[in-house]
Image (cartoon, rainbow, N blue to C red):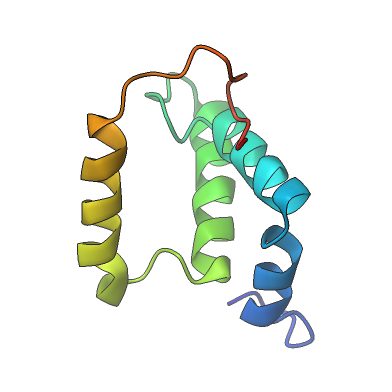
Length: 90
């Protein structure tokens, strides 16, 4: 969790639980190079920020590994959506 004790996991959940919040989260992950290989030091730093955000949100933690693996496999089986901009949730 962040070094600021006044910002909690619940704050992160509240911020990203709405439809606009999920769209912003998707955009942050896309712009943070989470879905592609990092080629520069700057991209690595951006990805680290996005991963830290996911950790602060409580999404990335060891007890979530089976759930995350299942969700990734289900997502991989879906056909690509051509009607959606990259980083957009809906």
